[in-house]
Image (cartoon, rainbow, N blue to C red; front, side):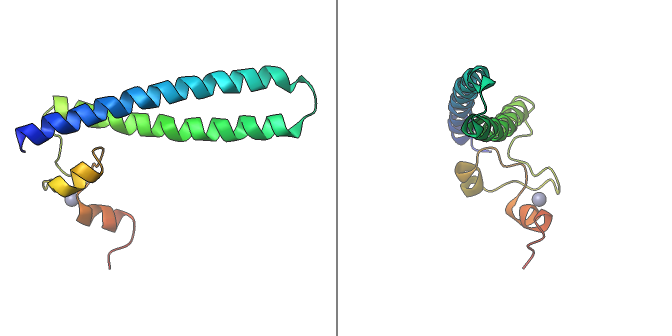
Length: 114
Ligand SMILES: [Zn+2]
């Protein structure tokens, strides 16, 4: 893989990681605050808490993807499809730096092989 591109993608991933960690932290604090305020019977609090929780959950999953990608960079397996071993196209990695599969495998995994 193009070394310059790899450096660039690594930087993108590190920024993504920092942003996600920051957001997760902020959200967790909000959830905690709402939880404390939930002594009454306000369903709005419950709704907010659940919404915030599911958002945080999604971000945690994203963070996991980012960490995986950074690990693959470290292990020199970044940019290689996890399923068929082919190189993932540059265009795809630029669009989605956490991509683990080539476009073809991704389609097959999603059951969209048309
Ligand atoms: Zn593949």
